[in-house]
Length: 67
Image (tube, rainbow, N blue to C red):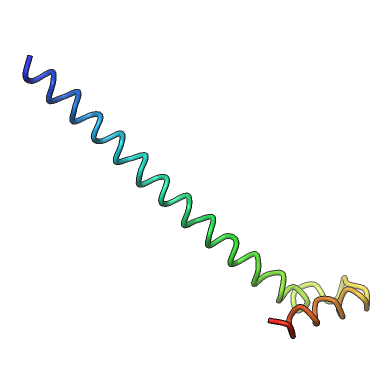
């Protein structure tokens, strides 16, 4: 009986720990994604300037200056 209780509590601990770690990891990945998205929006003028109109280039340049 004691072995069964140990297995159940051990499994519960593992699951709770696993979900807590995954939750933290997901939150940190979301923060990183938001940061990289912001950087991309500011620097996209350098990556896509050949396909952009003059007004789009000016808008992207203004965003870059404003940072």
